[in-house]
Length: 310
Image 1 (cartoon, rainbow, N blue to C red):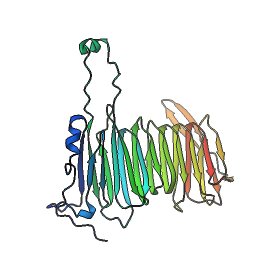
Image 2 (cartoon, helix red, strand yellow):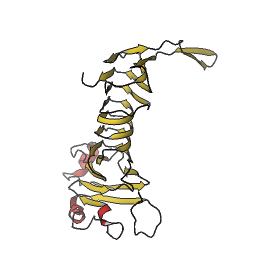
Image 3 (spheres, rainbow, N blue to C red):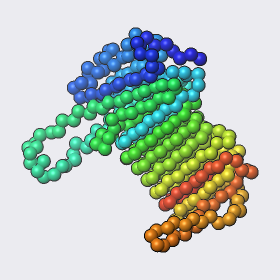
């Protein structure tokens, strides 16, 4: 299927939406009819990018260049949660919201003296950029350590996801089928009724995944440093599993796992004139005769390998 034609003078297929939000006094201007609407001269009307301002956020729609095949959505957040859910459509609908800071925060006695009863004026504005090229769509907002922007995206049911959070954020996916890479640092990961494959890793938080369907023959991995790893598979799962519950964790499973007998794995680590020998604690086994490799790992948590319907 050929890509939709555009009328831009540039031959590049990149589609770029520069979306600014200025709440408070500017919100009325941005919400005015046509103020945030992409010109129909820039793209066909039926594939237009649309945008609308809200009180403290922005909603907009961006199409994939070839909706006949699954696209890829990439979202990278410094601070702010990511929520992605599937729907029966072809475009990607975004809603971005700015979390306002607590007006009651105190910055010190000296600041209180200088304020003299004045109230802080907040202008919750942020910039968002979305690029789309060859069915790969990437969203970047200017979320930062002092600015929290949450992203809610509705995507076609078959969409590949590459989602990353860093600080004070939860990452949630519902009903999307594809190859998913989900990464968090300070927050949990939750993927419910997803299909395809998942690689999920967080440092501080729980990893919870419930599969509606699997992509046969594809490896997967689930890990958390400080948190539980809880994964539910269809009963037909065939896999070779690698399980590492750390020093303090336990493993619970609804599947019959047949242990794989193999020599003890050791490695030497030299430090100065000394040698440190590390004995691998990872367990391996097969489920339903074996299949692609699936690894489960936590350092301070519990691993749950569940069977759907039980």
